[in-house]
Image (cartoon, rainbow over all chains, first blue to last red; front, top):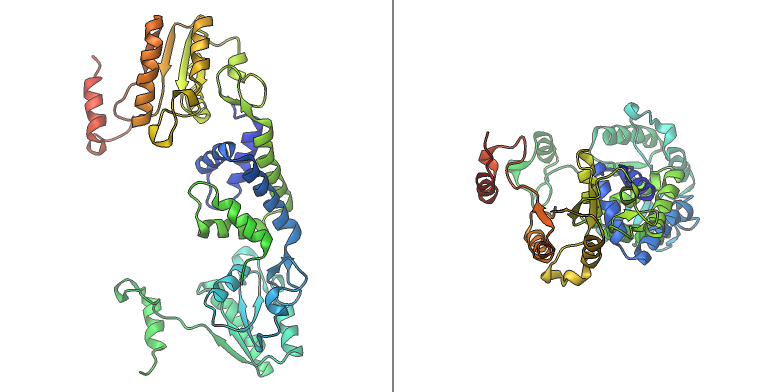
Amino acid sequence: MQYPTPIAKLIDSYMKLPGIGAKTATRLAFYTLTMREEDVTDFAKALISVKRDLHFCDVCGNITDEATCDICRDQTRDRSVILVVEEPKDVMSMEKMREYRGLYHVLNGVISPMDGTGPDDLNIASLIKRLQNDEVQEVILAMNATTEGEATAMYLSRLIKPAGIKVTRLAHGLAVGSDIEYADEVTLLRAVEGRTEL
Amino acid sequence: MQYPTPIAKLIDSYMKLPGIGAKTATRLAFYTLTMREEDVTDFAKALISVKRDLHFCDVCGNITDEATCDICRDQTRDRSVILVVEEPKDVMSMEKMREYRGLYHVLNGVISPMDGTGPDDLNIASLIKRLQNDEVQEVILAMNATTEGEATAMYLSRLIKPAGIKVTRLAHGLAVGSDIEYADEVTLLRAVEGRTEL
């Protein structure tokens, strides 16, 4: 016996989400049956809206529901610094710290030969264009501390430095509140190398 | 800075699903952004369809997209046995074993005073009605082996037995392939009590 078609289709859709296998998808589909009609309709509308109403900011590549994102339009922000991140969600993480007042640039990916992603597949050309026209004095590279992130940072640094713009990257070291005992060797090495005077 | 409205709404919707917190919901919402438009549209349609096209079988209470479910309509099935389960998904689990050829009855819940669910909130009246009209000779109670499941089974047994219908319930014991070492005391006790002669 098969599941009725509507539920089988919903299970298939849930299974397309990352980290959700057949068992969880089935549980979610049956849970959906018991949800309030209103909540399910809102869910469906939100899905459609995300694909229809969101696009990339034509300046920085962040996601936005307008032509240019809130941050790029905000005239109170410091236009001399651009912080470069991999994904739109990294912008949100940075904004949560409420300290950084410069602009952003979202690559929407990293250089990853394994996945066939080269520099041309990323928002790099638009970054270079911004550096030519703007009053930018510093580019902060905030890629993830992964092999691909490091490679992308290295590539960007070689591309931007010759233009005489200061290129920095985030510090590596011990996470605040963490134990030395549980830190891996590479992180510890970076923490020692990057030690600061008291 | 807030997330753009469409993504914030989608995060809210994902968070309404069981076992999905703010972090996972955010990850899923950003993943949705990268999904193929077609897949997202199918997802939205499947959500709507599950609420609109599925309802409970008017005989057994299982979910179906027709008035009466496949199993109740199947004339080759043994109409003398009814297996009573808590949820529609339990029917699917039973069907997977490909051995049971009788009918089902889905309570759509269990008696649970903590959640305010009493016998009147379950599909019990329709079960009793089926027992009066049909050629039913045996009712198999297949509730979950939880406190609420056991209480519901006890209640049903007391309700049905006086009518002279055989009432049985699933065997408790060691799961096939499991270690005695890891079985809990209650399961072991049930396994010893229910021992069979070789």
